[in-house]
Image (cartoon, rainbow, N blue to C red; front, top):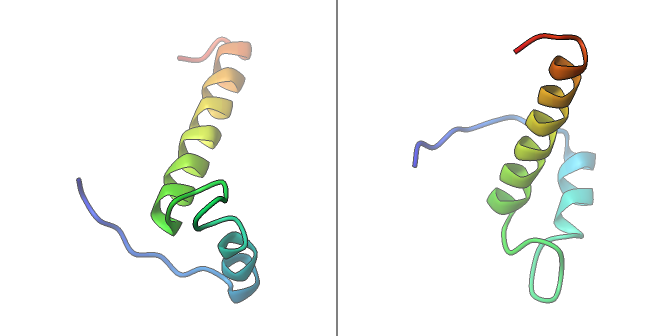
Length: 54
């Protein structure tokens, strides 16, 4: 799997970390970021379909 690096505001990172760990929503920061990317791509696909793009 390819790796990427990104800059993220501290406030966003701290908020994201609240949802990562044992008994939380995501097992890792990478898992949270992948999930967010998938979700936005699904939303963009829905918008494109609505506008007849694909």
